[in-house]
Image (cartoon, rainbow, N blue to C red; front, side, top):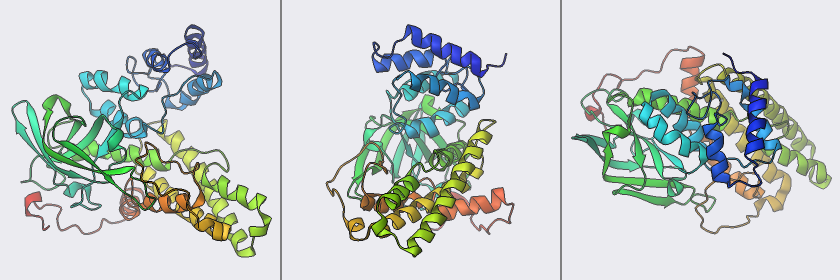
Length: 394
């Protein structure tokens, strides 16, 4: 039987009648909401949902938001919600789904992503972190880099090299890694902003049980593709209201500070406004497509557009503010749990936006995906496609 918007509204209302958010500990409230199938409603029954159409998620969220119910702080656990959860749902065993999805959604366990490596550049399939079978365990050694939130995380999604004797895409295996396990070391990477939300992670003889392997041995690339497609939608496909986000900040300054205006800046602001509105509408369309199935390569286009617009808007804002735009509020070394684009000043936004075209897949790599998988253009020549990983030049 298909679940309707009316069904979900009724369920959420009845849930709130028996779980008054003013009188319940937030964590207990979130656990109960998950168990009631009112977390991510498109997930299966027993795993926080009820196999309802994904498009109806906003109906449930609206009822809870209107009642002042606590949320799960999605900005803090975005990697878990947007990347780990859909991958565990797609490839996890029943035991893995049961173990990980509930504390992931409630925010009890924060996740990070151990994909990028200093020696692989933008070519994820060239990674060299090695996992060697040892009975019922795997011994993992290697280094990961640009790991957002690793210092706050209890778990990580991890891709490793398990067979160096086959081509690079074939010899990878995907794991769920306990970030508190012996041999896991997290070191901060201080960024141009002065903060260190990114980290490098060293794995030295880390023992991972085979029960924490996600997908089949050697199929890590296939599993990772699910993660990456969801990641790009999570980064670039967030739907804002009109003039939401950075365009709203710049437009507000323009309206309130007429002394800063010039004809040239006006032309650029109008162009950025049109681009922001186009991206907002495209994001709405992408979310509608996502509600009908798994995300595809179209999310790569959204992510590229999001990155370029953010960088253009933050540059415009700094120019609009003139000398004020050169100021910076605080160079104190910190390791934040979230990225706050709207709560800081123009200088921070300008510097932080430089990373948008790198994180979540570089714009250069994503343009290749768009060309080959969306537009159907010929693939670039790849001389390493059929070469064993161990024979690749380094």
